[in-house]
Amino acid sequence: MKYLLLFTFLIQISSAFNMGIWRGTTTHYLRDENNNLDLVKPKIYTYNLSNDTMINYNNLRNSILDTKNLNLKLRSSNKLGGIMARIPKNHNWILDNLNSYLTEVNFYHETCRSILSFNYTYDSQKKLKLQSIMTSALRCGHAKSYKFRLRLSNITALVKILEDWSYCKTTKINPLFPYNYEISYSNEFDYKYLLTNDNRINKILTDNLVISIPDIIEDYKPFTFLIGCLISPNCYKQVNMNYNFNGELMSVEYNEYEPFELD
Image 1 (cartoon, rainbow, N blue to C red):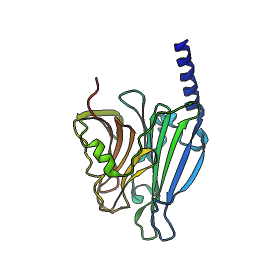
Image 2: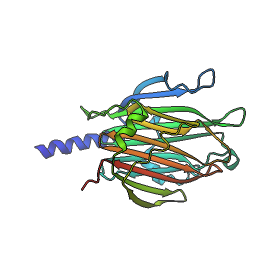
Image 3: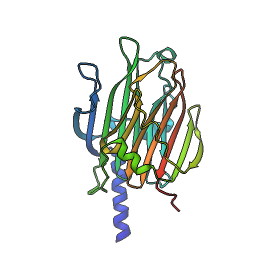
Image 4: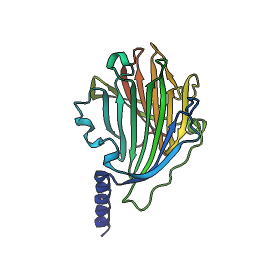
């Protein structure tokens, strides 16, 4: 009977994933009338998210016609989740004639999805400026209960938790050969970007989503986007997107942090 109940639960969860039955809150942060990005007073929408209102992540690896973006779907080491992402290959209108660039990262774990997307747009002065940020904290509609998620208040609280952690698995992806991963291991957390405030927005948002990105992308200077999520007290995921001086995506790093190496 126990195994039958477990099997039934897994079928329900799988059905919810496939049918797009997700409940939660989506928060929009937009620039105000003074052209400042307000991360204090967002517009909030609560709704059930369906496959009609989001990227069809199940088909990301088969998206060979999407030449503008790097589409990723990577499983976590513990097999309980992973990331799905759509990452622009360029942030330079001279290269691709685009005026707007949308990046989206979805951290999924068991019955939870934590999604963060952000958009850069050229303004009237031809500066590539962060225009909006959107977060979604979603839960599977078929699940009756969820695990408690520790709530962070600021970047300092996150760094305090992670500074003594001693295990990180890094999966490095070359955008030119996205299915040939390079895997390495380290024993410390690199938090330099999180504490760098020079023209960067460093913020903890809904569902422990972490964002560290430049407010303005300066011409002919390399830059990095950092998006993370504290999934649980013993699990932090982070995606680093590294661009060169010409705005071309050079590498993506998927980092899985834990307090210590698990057997």
